[in-house]
Amino acid sequence: MMASREASGGSTDIVGGAQAPPTMSRPASAVTTPRRTPRRWREIAVFVGPALVVFSAFVIVPVVLAGYVSFFTWDGGGDLGSFVGLDNYIKVLQDTVFIGAMKNNAFVVVMSLLLQGPVALAIALLMNRKLRFRAGFRAMIFVPYVLSEVVAGAMWRLIFDQRGILNSLMVQWGIFDTPQDAIGWLSSTTLAMWTVVFVLTWKYMGLAIILFLAGLQGVPEDLVEAAQIDGASWWQVQRRITIPLLGPTIRVWMFLSIIGSIQLFDMARLLTNNGAPFDTTFTMAMFVIDRAVTNRQYGYATAAAVVLFVISMAAALVFMRFVMRRDNETVGKGAV
Amino acid sequence: MTALDTRRRSAPTTGRKLSDVGAVAYCVAILAAGFAIVPVVYIMYSALRTNGQLAASPVGLPRPLVWSNYSQVLGSGDFWKMLFASTVIALATTVGVVLLGVMAAYPLARYEFPGREALYTYFTAGLLFPITVAALPLYLILLQLRLPGTPWGLVLPQVAFQLPVTIVILRPFVRAIPRELEEAAAIDGAGRFQFFFRILLRLTMPALVTVGVLAFVGSWNAYLLPLLVVQGSDWTTLPLGVARFQSDHSQDTALILAFLSLAMLPAIVFFTLMERKIVSGLSGAVKG
Image (cartoon, rainbow over all chains, first blue to last red; front, side, top):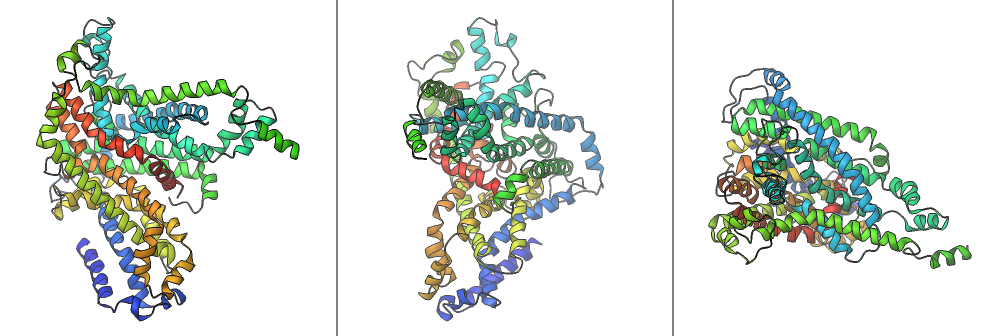
């Protein structure tokens, strides 16, 4: 299937090249009579073709294929194994580790919105003025976001590990006798997910602040000044004018946050050493990759991936439809 | 009206009690910035200490400075090899995304042809698919093409997954170029291709930089796809290296600190310079 796509893409290219140089033959016609000429279609094919081939081969075909291979016992080799119908899906939805992973993702979604949103908004509102070193502050606040999740996860694991930096520090301060007695930030089944949420907050708070600050640039100063002249307090101005006008930006951030939380993988995998303790910090994406790479249950893992996709798609559509509806009306057709 | 104008002018934005709000603003900014960078700074300077010093006093200052951790990482061929792999793959991804993206955006923005909107929707559908969903079947396809373990096995899928965002961001920019320019170019004898390469690429350069930076960041930080495609090969990238290094040297905290610091340094320098581009790209991508 893919070979034929490549071939058709290539052949249009060759035909286009075999033509006389298009610049010489009919210079003005390209603009004035913009229709129906075969040459036009060749131009379109040459411009769009490569992107279309690459996108189809490496995004659309795999996604469609995902639906197909999730019905097989595929073990990661070239052969798909035997057809098992909906078995993989039934097993996934009864798998306690996957159900736990779904709950963990839900926890991350809720906590990200509740912790990062209000705090980032408050910080952005307070910082939204002419500050010295403003660019410097922005750059520093943005640093955690630009680090890769892997680096962030590895870094915080050194800090939160049982014998890590934080526990050593608590021993040094005399709170505990040895690191083993100290707090199991990542080894306690009740605490580990909170530690994940904390690191996520550290990593993504800056993005929220910077997005909000950028959105605040769009709030007209006249409005704020007029309200101040009318005697509105700082808080009244924020509450009645600034925050409502920031609405679209807040909703964009919420969207990014929800989708990102549902697909959480890199950071959690590194931080929790792949779901420890006892698989309690698994996320859905970690489940997918672990079952594939570690257990070589590629068919089973693909079924879990499809479930993950359906959940994330449903969340995106619901959010777009009910929360971002107003914004999309003004912004335009809405790409998604 | 005039009275109001003068009053407005005489009440500057930083007037009255706002000065103490100003102090609060500085405190908040310092706290937020500190929260963000203290762990990073801590990691970087702690790598200048020995394991013994770290154990005795976890947050002590490096005194005297111990360069051996950094020099040990920099002296090993592995780090440079991974840095090279990450750089080559990120650059190739960026060039691929920008070139294919702007080429596709051109007819989608400026040609009238039946099926244009359907084609655009087809590309934007890619925004809905997280790489997790496609990763495993993608691996199957890469196996057939014998691409795992090669840079192409990573670059081609990364380009493909970045194309939707790129096209969504670029289309309005390409459309905004005045038609008169295209007509003038045509009258001067320039064909579509000359117009594209000589004029359009230059006029859309700011937007191309934005999508390029987004593609570079995505590739540089990627973990999931490299884990499947180039893990253990000659093209192991830095994020994979960080993960492996941490498990290989779990007893040598100081060395891990040095490796982490060196792995994050290029990203911090480059991406903070590009902060505005990244932010505008992100919000542009969602708003469509």
